[in-house]
Amino acid sequence: MVTVPNLITLFRVFMVPAFIMASFYREFKLALLVFLAAAVSDALDGFLARRLNQVSQLGVIMDPLADKALIDSGFLFLSYADGKIPPWLTVIVISRDLLILSGGWLLSAFGKLKKLRPTPLGKATAFLQFTTILITLLHLNFQLCNTICLKGLYLTTAAFTVASAVEYTVKGIGELSSE
Image 1: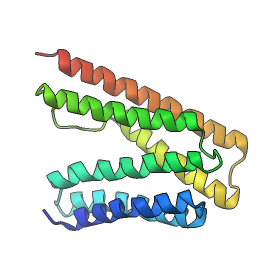
Image 2 (image 1 turned 90 degrees about the horizontal axis):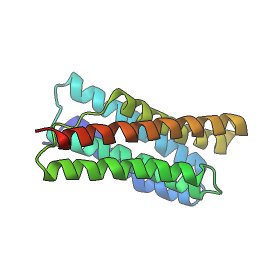
Image 3 (image 1 turned 180 degrees about the horizontal axis):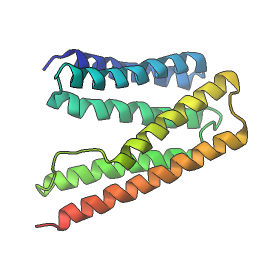
Image 4 (image 1 turned 90 degrees about the vertical axis):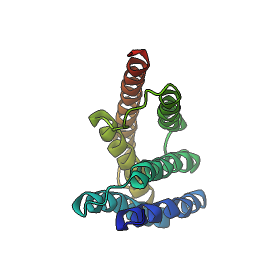
């Protein structure tokens, strides 16, 4: 179904390669602009889908995939960029996403997959991950934070990411165990 929110989400999907290229070539001002545009489009598509009553199955699937593509590529390439995001944090973030994706496939294979809904902890984790990328890009462009500020942000993001992974794992195991 072609809707305005779905077109905005598709726009975000096409922004991911631009963000990757800007990050890879250390064009951090451009990467910041692309990331900000993608973040605004994320908020806008969800708002419009609800406001215009245009929530669609395509959007429900495509929106989180676009978010994960942007977040995971952000962590990967900003970790690569002179180690600005610690590689250990990137491994945690991407591992959580792979765990959730694998769990979803497993639940689906056993016919146990209910409508996937993010938990409050999952939403807070996504917000922190977006914020981590944004603050890192702002720091790369404007020396916004000191090392202690960045380390605190990275540790907080890691803690939420791990807690969220545990929460989704427990929920998934519970779903598989239920009759």
